[in-house]
Length: 130
Image 1 (spheres, rainbow, N blue to C red):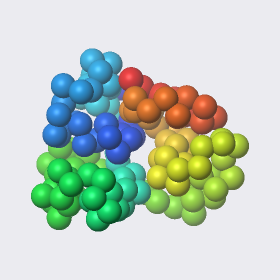
Image 2 (cartoon, one colour):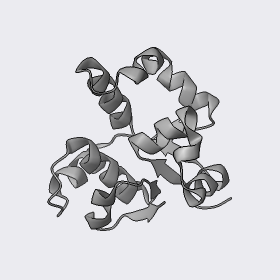
Image 3 (cartoon, one colour):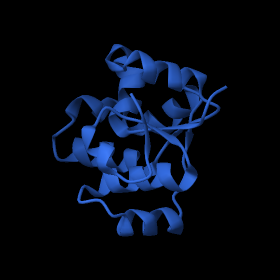
Image 4 (cartoon, rainbow, N blue to C red):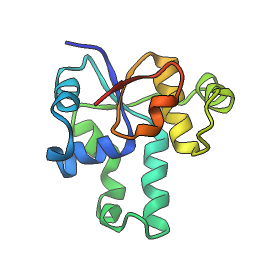
């Protein structure tokens, strides 16, 4: 088993909807991780994007997302005051609240962050896997 990982929202969706989009390194990190976690903010992000029409293909999965994560062997990461405060105070110019909370979750819980989003490279203290 290797280091526990946190999946960015797109990495989680790709893991069940289009696994070929994951890099070989990301796929290995997920299958070999001591634990695979998804931030609760990813559930919110998917729901929001479905609601405003930006991710309609995820609409059929909305009600099943918690069970889907469990079937994959993953768990929801905790959402704590420490994570919220870290996201708010993180010295990172990136303003996307979803990304800030995901980066803070990885930082506070010391998880490798599986993402192909280049914005995370500038988030201090994150260990990216792709």
